[in-house]
Image (cartoon, rainbow, N blue to C red; front, side, top):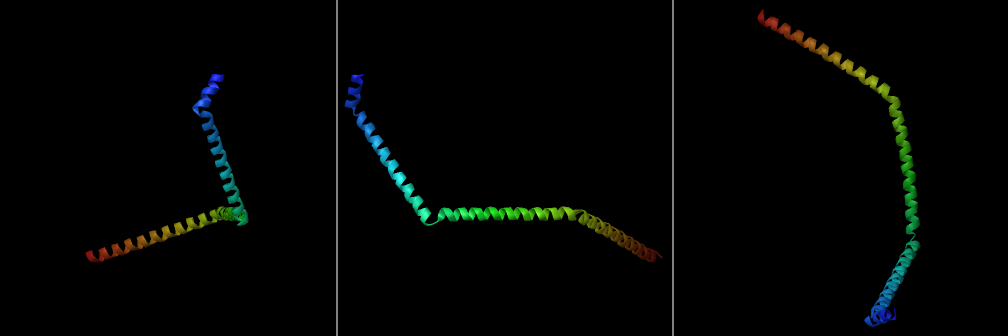
Length: 118
């Protein structure tokens, strides 16, 4: 075991490992400072509070919109039978008028043909 420790010490691996841990610790410290500074700036500028307020307002607006759509949908469902009946009546009326106009046109064409042949 002593030989292994001596070989590791002589190879410089312990110093390299120590330096690596030191560098990692310093990097973690620097990152922690940057995060702390960023959080402080966000707090001072009220960014987080303002963002939370906007999210809350957006959620309230979304709920109101959903309720409005629900009411509109309900009204549309209630009006659908009346609308369908009105459309069916209008369609039948249009068909009847078209049929009558077609008959009149045929009658006039026949009358005109009969006059030509006579």
